[in-house]
Length: 292
Image (cartoon, rainbow, N blue to C red; front, side, top):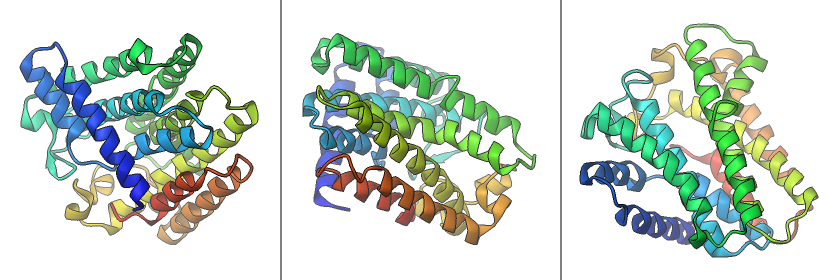
């Protein structure tokens, strides 16, 4: 991992720590929100916000607000995914899941609060976003995390349990469930810029679409090849729960080949954006080479 990635990881950790420490909410709720958001994670979506913003000259304070919002949405989704009514997982990032550490009601409320906090961070004057930028970013994030994006993808994933999906149907699930929020991170980061062009947004959208699908394909592979200790969550859980995955549908070898092809597509997509795209390239490489 590059020094720049580490710098941005530390930066967003500090931003989130400050935001979550100053909330005027019941103490147990605040602790649950902090527990799930500040636990060790890759901060991949925040890094994408910074990387895309850097590529099109967006100011850092704006990127801080949007990166924090993406991390809040991601944390909320993980809390709810882990609940007994959903994936019923006891371990996340090597720690007890929120409903195990606290209780189900507190976990649900912490997820709800993090979801709404995300939009507050963007709409707040402290974000330094213009009204038009805040509106565009809120709309993109709502679409990507809601019924046509992440939430809709989760519903499709639940309905696909113990069923054999076609490749097109599986791709639709993954592009919504995982890819939509990754796409939002990239596009919202770019929308923080006053000078981003329509063509740059098109190119970054293509990059994000390829990367989002690659991320989930690699997740499917790691569920088979990595240990629980490496993943920080139970390995083999997809197979155990009857989930539709790329290795199950096209085999492990073809899944790895697909991930590699998607990586190449993502790199080609940003070839014409400008000179400041190295972090975007590094993050794409990290996706396909990661072991957890």
